[in-house]
Image: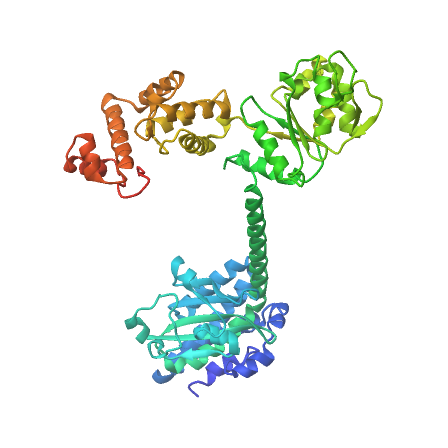
Length: 577
């Protein structure tokens, strides 16, 4: 009689709460639950709250706790139905579900782990009572630990006291020994038909008498969220597949970029490298655009030697350096006797480049009278030598470069419009060095190493002030100017350090501007002191005693200054924090 009214109230629902786990698998299909709009909610609404409260008052002291647990379990099922009917985001469903489990049945911790069918790993997708680092540690293989065994066997596992269970790995490190003694653990599989796709696990205060009830409850919850877990499982596998594909393509890109000698990690350089990879194995005409000194010839060189024509001739022609009277003969060749001084037949550069690549620098300087003949070369890959009648066909890849605005030249009538469009099949715009600040020190290090080897010197480092000047200078001459600057500095340096006074005078005034930006005299003096100590520590490879001796100060003073300026003397590369 004392429990009669409780059972009467529960019988109004369609679920017999005390069914076995086997019956749960047979009768509780998660799709039916979702399609029927959660009959749990409807059946629970039929039960009067007053009736349940009245019933509980009739329970004996021995059964009152059990009655309370049953009410908490049913309340959780109702909350689960609300979560699944109202939330669309899968991660939000998992998070809210675990929080409701904590508020309704008092879990200490909870986790939803999902099997990756590609890698076989079982990773925690969402957790309660676990910090970010602990969640990252929660990764298992099928058969490993309690979670892995549940995935392998498809059977739930209930552990009354986790400190006494050798199978429990505590992989997350969330439980200490004292807590493990007073904690029970339950892990049940999440299924789609007979396939195990994940697990739900919870930590409870030590309660061996309630484990069977909680296993049944958790099995219902697992069946309820199975479709959401499947969606999450598929999405994670797709994301991992995309990541793997992205990594593969990135590795291929890196491997292809190794073929290029042009140096740079800026976004502009990465963009150019991607374009070069795209075009290098085609026959398309490439037009390199950029200011004087940006390295157009270097890029042309990279395109040729990264292409299938790498073993064939690579002919470089500076159109601005050839006299106008000779340029036609130089490019297209001539027959013996075709003009005064033509004592023998001469092949032109286009004929010499047959099968390979011809690089025409300063194409904007090509005389207007020759542009029509050059246009024919681009269109038909054929021409006649001066004084000859035989048409010569060549298989040649054309790379042109200019620092001129060809569109402006077209408007002025000094460059043919049709030739401009023929050249602009695949234009590559090379940014000036002032727009590639991140590449300046990479190039400076490269040139310092090259010229040190050339002049038989040790590879120098750059002082802080030098680095500041190099990064602040506008570099109107671009990479060519930087190369000449570093060569001069390497020659002048006698202490394996390139100081600001080794730079050209027009750059040294920048140091004064930088110092004025710092502020007051004490601030400027501190900056100089910090720079001197930093450079000496670099030179002495972090040896404080040696650095102090070279600077003429005591070890105590240098130790105080290192602490003041937050330097790291032991690191090979001294960095101010």
